[in-house]
Amino acid sequence: MKCKKIKNQLLLFVGDDLPERKKKSVESHLKHCPTCATELKGLRDAKNSVHRISQIDLPGTLHPGFPGKVMQKIAKEQKNTTLERAKSLIWLTQNPARIAGVFAAAIILIVSAVIFFISSGKAPSDRLAEKILSVSESGSPELEWDPEHIFFKTFDGPYRLDNWEAPKQSGVYAVMHKSPTDDKPNTYIIDYCGQGYNLSSYRGYPWLRHRIKRLVARTGATENVYIAVFLMPDSSKLERRQIEEALIKTFNPYFNRGV
Amino acid sequence: MKNDCAELIKKACSGDLAAYQEFIRLYSPRVHAIAYQIVGNSIDAQDIAQEVFIRLYRSLRTYKPQFKFTTWLYRLTVNHSIDYLRKHSRHKNISLENVQDESKLKDSAPSPDSSLELNELKGAIQKISEGLTWKQRKVFVLRELQGFSTNEVAQILKCRVSTVRVHLSKARKRIKVALLKHALSGHSGLISQEE
Picture 1 (tube, each protein chain N blue to C red):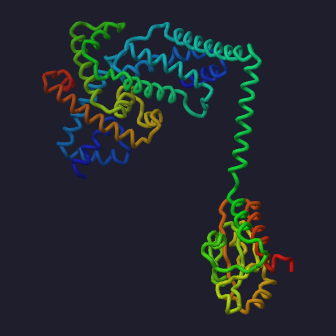
Picture 2: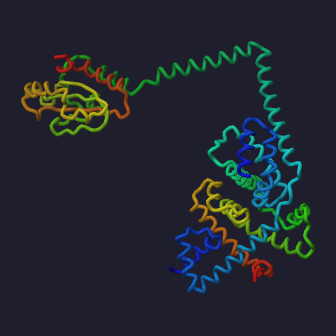
């Protein structure tokens, strides 16, 4: 090992502050390196000098009455705190109007906070559901592709369902197919809207299996079926249901009609 | 003493003032010594010790028994001493004259010869201390002057053992250089004392 590295370790070795494994390597180095041994001697001398100073340079004995003096201060402080509290109570009780004032101010503050929370503290799911409903309330399952439409702005997709891998996340989704008519090439028809805590657990859509055949029959082929998803990590079922219901109300999907 | 401390603090937490007074009697000398070794003035150190015990009493309710109480006590002492230094910047103004006055406060007065050497040593350590950073000074006082182990110092300062080792290395390096300079400037009593 190089002397430079050892010299740095000697600063800890001198006070027995070096970890055991490093200590052994320093000891073996010192056996055949007189330079480092001299360095260690210098450090030991310095350490001994400091030790001598610490033995001689003492702060002097504290006065025997020190603990009592501290306790007096503590008692005085406690007395003052009690007095302050008592004064506050007296100030309030001397004039009942003051109590009423303080009480009224507290009530106003609480009511203002509640009103502020109700007016501005709507959950994101509430706002999205409202937006979906406000865009279209026609009840038609047809949805023309438009990047500015709230649905396409918020939902990911549409992806082809046969290529889509469901993520391990909670969210709301809409299953749809493209319009078979040539005059509406960019129009999707929403067939089903749903939500789930873990979308990957719905892989294969067992709840749709008996309907898939009918969906394929309606669309002509599986590759015509699409899905759009709005992922909502850490969301509650209630929040997802709000959006799902807004979608159902807006698009009136065929398979949500209980058929 | 360890069991005494736990028992006394338990009683003090339940409002036993006599128990807290006994705790002060047992631990005030070390608290005073730590504060003195950081600020370099016995009277200031006494003020710091007083403030530490008052603050500690105020915070007794927040104490969690799973932790060692004395670790908390020494941490508070070190931090309060450094705060005191920062506030007063006294460490820049400590002179040998002040140090000489303090020796009068001692119970056992040294002989004239040893008094001269003592003052020389004190002056050296003051200058060395002034050259250390706050963190180095904390580690230096706790490890070198108070004799706490590196693990204990890490617990008191709420840091890693490796951090303590880094500061300790730097402090020792500076001290060695300072003592060497002091010895070279004619005060041979320091370094060559052991030879």
